[in-house]
Image (cartoon, rainbow, N blue to C red; front, top):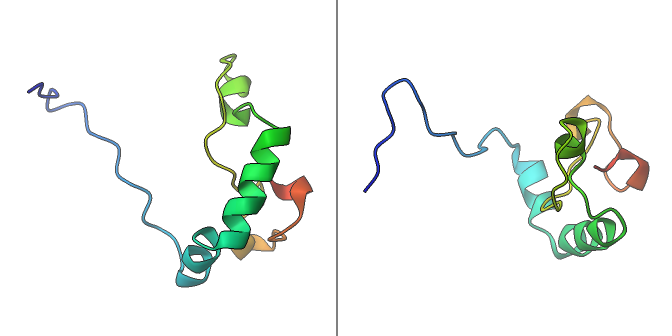
Length: 78
């Protein structure tokens, strides 16, 4: 089993999600929408900004819902 040096920390799982958003992101409608979006936009936007070509594995909101981002607006997805 490999051990990380003390100076290297494992990334923490994403846990800062409200119950409303948890329910949204675990809904059948979101899973279908996310899958359809990624079928049309298959590359990771953040990776492309760093010059890396990688397949997208998730869909999220550019403007977070809590900050007024529209939930079902494809222009707000990445």
